[in-house]
Image (cartoon, rainbow, N blue to C red):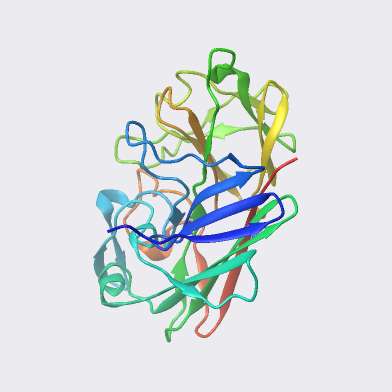
Length: 291
């Protein structure tokens, strides 16, 4: 089934949003596509939204209020169809996902997730609004997973691209095991001058996962020229990922992470969870901007 994407425009910037997962599927600046276009030889995703979990649960299951639930890595929002919300102009669109029988089998709270995409002169803002429509405190986390295209050609190789942090970081990497769970031990990751240079093998051992970073602006550069900036909105954790040798890189602001390898599987004690009271709203916003 061919999905009709929602197109928004503002001056030289155009974006498309797919109702499946409310996924940003195109982001063009002056007609140049900046977003990875999902080549199935590497990875078909583009910018999935991670909700109500980020990363993996141990054995893809968890216990909530003494009941067992199964949920795949990164949660179910990315495989759910969102409905468009009324918008007043051509430069913004909102998408809504509400809990349903299928979601309640995986996750017991009644919720609404709204994702608002707004273009401006230099890029796009993406705001997540989570509403608790249940009668108990709702526990969740949320994260972003945008993938950016790297223009590799005879004059440009992966090592010409780098990731620059806007604040001084002591980066400690949590390795992921084969099931996507975080090692409890960390390894110091050298970022010379707050810069991580990409390479053919940097993602051979899966994503680079850094908890509790200080930076709130992450720059993608080519030959030291800034291509774009991801505003994390103050998200405390960051994932960097691509398939080895692939012409893209994901810059992922996260409010949570995968389970640790030593988890007891009880959801309520999972670190980094947001707790949202009945009837309340939670908001978080990220941005992608161009120089």
